[in-house]
Length: 90
Image 1 (cartoon, helix red, strand yellow):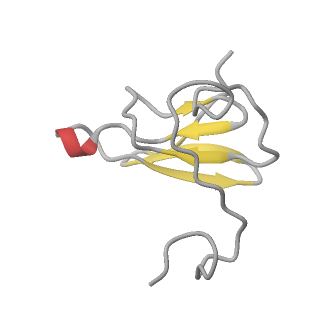
Image 2 (cartoon, helix red, strand yellow):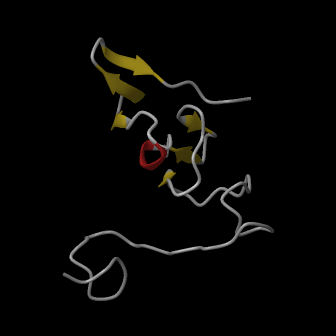
């Protein structure tokens, strides 16, 4: 199975950025024109920054695995008690 990018099975435009600083940083407020959903750097809880959504909550380290729902109604974390809306951080 090919990875995302040229010849990919994914029918979306992709661009992989691996950087910890500058304009290409995942922390950058740069608007990519789409919602960027990412992991790899654990956060305490899902973080919605308007232009990006950090969903890695550290399951590999024994913390909770997080599932999210992205729909026309917004973004929610899914859990045993149902869906809880994720608000955009200031």
